[in-house]
Amino acid sequence: MPQPARGRSDTCPGVSSLHPAEDGYLARIRVPGGVLSRQGMDAVAECSTTFGDGRIHLTSRANLQIRGLRSTDASGVAGCLSGAGLLPSVAHERVRNILASPLSGLVGGTADVRGTAGELDRALCASASLAALPGRFLFAIDDGRGDVAAEDPDVCWRAVDPYRGRLEIGGIATGIVIDREDVADRLARVAELFLQVREHVAPGAWRAAELPDAARHLGAALTGADVPPPGADRPVAAAAGAPPAIPGPVGRLVRDDGGTALGFLPLLGELTAVQLRRIAELVPQVVVTPWRTLVLADAPRDVVRHLDSLGLVTDPDDPAVGLSCCTGRPGCAKALSDVRTDALNLLAARPGQRRRAHLSGCARRCGHPRTAHTDVVADGDGYHVDGTRVPSDGLAAALWRTV
Image (cartoon, rainbow, N blue to C red; front, top):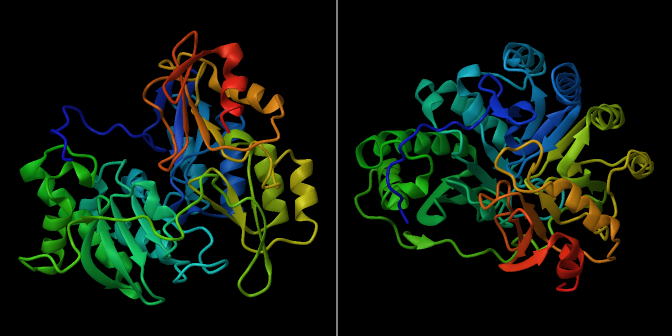
């Protein structure tokens, strides 16, 4: 449902626009499609140790954050990242929010969308007007399995065969079919139309769903049609291959070509600079997913042993798979609890079980999963687990017994 016009501008953090927090300033590094090269890994690790607290946080949009910065560190961080190709346009740095199916071309999927996020990134940076796009506006390129389409994107291309896909806007089908080779240009054009339309109907809107009849109007503007095609204006149904309740991928994966890929997990979505540098020594590239996991397209024979030795999770049955949390205290002023410590205590209870659960330090629920999960929200003296209040010392029993 459309929302009223916002009374303030978007303050989503970036690299040149640092965000103040209780533990210093934070920088958010966009990683279109989640693709992070060896050079990029080294640069992010260097930034986190030179300017931050030596840790790197994975976000629910497959981006990265470093914390503990000073207000004067923006130029230094920008220079470090630019050299690794992670900041191709300072003007567009906050608008490069692009998800792509992380296993595309490796395991399953209808179309191979590898490289499409990079094409879209270049199209966004080539448009001067798109520098004004809100930092919360999200693109998704889904290879047909429905994984990133489920992450609440503003504009999504979902493959229907290896060469074509359907356009979705704000979670609503438009009925418009776009060829794979035209995805970057068409999605960038939809974003330009969003900026034009919002000035007339919802000034200051951050998301497509905040515009009245966004799918109908933006779709019609894109094609020049007065009447939407058949199948338009309907909420998008979950795909048969929609993501499972426990996210991933984690563990060894047999690729469609017979090779081996690997998914692994940094505990609570947090890497140390030492871990990231070591990963860069082991492999030339990783893919960051919106479920705070990492994917290796080609897993060397002994890579699991090395990752395990770094404290990273490679076992798909580990209870850490599926458990996430926000920053919490002391890093966030709005948090009512140290949710990261409480989450680690949950894992220390060694339940031998897994579930999709997210611990939030306050009712804002920052970073919560977009798909089904157990909602755990702090209230200062305890938590509400899917609405039922439990004391802090009873959280483990309440959470694991309901599996």
